[in-house]
Amino acid sequence: MKKRLITTIIFISLCSTVVFLFGLGWVMKDQLVSAGAANAPVKPLKMPESKSSSQSKQIHIVALGDSLTRGTGDPEGKGYIGYMINDLKTKTKKPILLTNVAVKGATTANLLAQLKQPQIQREVKGADIVLFTIGGNDLFQGGNALTHLDTSYMKKIEKSYLVNLNSIYSEIRSINKQATVFHIGLYNPFNDLQQSKLTSSIVRQWNTDSANEAANYKEIVYVPTFDLFELHVNDYLFNDKFHPNTAGYKLIGERVASLITFSQEGNK
Image 1 (cartoon, rainbow, N blue to C red):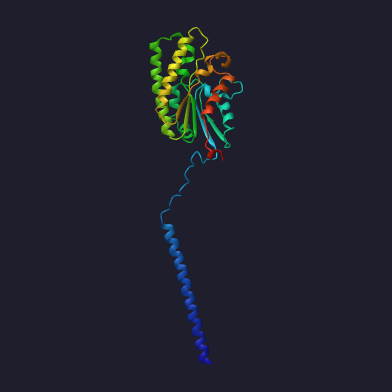
Image 2 (cartoon, helix red, strand yellow; image 1 turned 30 degrees about the vertical axis):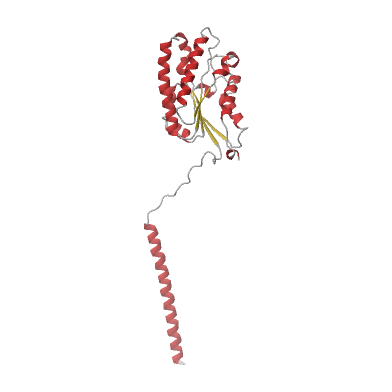
């Protein structure tokens, strides 16, 4: 009886020892694993890549340039941008986000300087479509150009304009290589004045040369507006006889919208 009791006690002791050693080994394993994890270098989280335009949930349009893009002269404040977006909403089910940073009175030099600003670059970088009007203030200079319409002077200011324009195209394309860019061209607001034949000739030349520059860049489209105003210019001008009125902006907006299409995937 006594021998059996001693055997039982020894068996229980051995079992306790095994359990203790197993538990100790488990704890040591956890400690070693935790220590290794704490000392291992932390890997940065890999952020998901931005979606392509066809996959994104919205269409981001960035508008740059001068007072025409601001909509000066339109009592409703829409400008061609507003009427264009109205048309685009009939073509796509995606929401359209507009960022309009155009500045009244801007010249090509002003726009080029603006494109160097970090905030503007961020907006352009995230755009699906970039629109701008520019060149009217370089050419017409608030109407001052009408006092010296000689050929040599016009060639001089156009040369400077084209240098800046080429830099604008290059800067936009370097910031965003994929967005479609629309440069809305010039019309002649002075078509009903005495020197209308000369001013129209100058505007047509600027448009031609601008379009040739745009053709050197992928997905940059020069949008003509000259013909829209040529026959009945006063019907489409605001009281200042320079900026478009509501009807004029609608014409421009409809033309730009007609050039913008969306894939079937983009409409889903």
